[in-house]
Image (cartoon, rainbow, N blue to C red; front, side, top):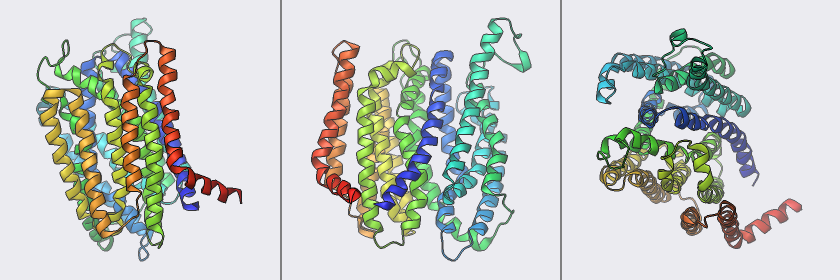
Length: 500
């Protein structure tokens, strides 16, 4: 139990920074939907989907490899850090240069003629992200959660600040005649451009500070370290590519698969903006998973040699499912006011019905992360590639078939289906090679009941806001009561131990 409390404490710190920081960042969707056109929001959705995909290429699994080798008994963590950071710095500069030079071709391919500069900025942004990955990982490994958290929050605050200045303040000041149009080269017709520039400025400014806090590295490409790390990380690269395909492909290709005039009054890129904005509402689940991942990954590796680690991993999974299903119900039943609060212009609420499905999809992503510990600590990372490749194929198949038929729901279904199948496959093989006593029956019951309550609460409507709010939120209490019925013996035993 002390191990669970330790993990919960670390997750709380990472979660505070992740939830606070990303919640601040998430508020930008209010700005984007209020000040930018649906077409600009659609551009933001597809370009950032591409950035998310390429981010995996730029880091190619080295973050997880760093944790694995820096915690090894026979290697100096500083040597591992120097070699890993030196390798990523070199490779990111090379990859960034290729992308920068190929920006015109990419702009034409994605239907952004004459806007190659967008993809040049994306190349710089990806380079900054890559050279920050290992310093951030080192802070996590050394349990410097508060330093990690402060750096993340500072980065996000700068990003938000630049967005507000460029998208809100400048247009207002120009309209009021305080500053002239074209002030400092400002272009009023730009939208997604200022989103990218804000992100680029914020990431570039944070690099020196993070490097200093993590400890400056010595450039060193040690083949004794890099060669085995490379062998370990390459399957993780393909896993990451397949995984990010599952994560982002629906947003990347939504506008290209949607038939013209599918939605009345919206072109395909505008519909992609609606889809991407509603996808953002599932961020609440993603925040929890990200915070958990920050704390759990180094924790799992450190505990891997403990003979009781399988039971520990099972308890972590159970607690994770309980918490996340409660969160899913709470968000879903309150979408009647959360949606309009964040999606400021009319028309975006048409996609709200996909949010419970997306929340469940992200929950299975978290389950998959828990399950994946078996191939990470047994060095069977090649399985990760095949599992995520299957997930990617399913994701592509579902979006290709169902977006033209079901529109928004087809995109959401691709997220849920791929993570569900990946979790099933990972569980089956994991129990063969590294058995963990998961409470599978209970887990499936909680997932099924929570999903049904989520959609029931979403569609429940009495016409009155107060009546809806009270009735819908009573379903959260109903679900908590259901959990208590199944868990009361374990909870009573836990509290008896604490009182002794």
